[in-house]
Image (tube, rainbow, N blue to C red):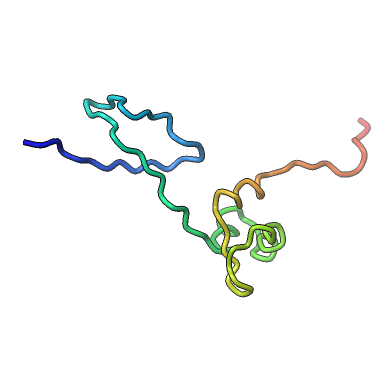
Length: 95
């Protein structure tokens, strides 16, 4: 009987620490493939981050990959640009 093939799906912000030839649970890793990233809409990003779609479109205008009316974005690049940057404005408080 030949070797059986299993598929495991892993989602993560960083690549998994797996290596070809590694033995995991009695099985050997023989192939790893990254799926093509699908573009997501401004509405999905706004819902995920709790901000308005207008704010998403304004902040991510540089990476817009859709047409004028579609506003589609790469989710990885969008996450990097929308991370909470705690920029402080004005002078420090005097306690």
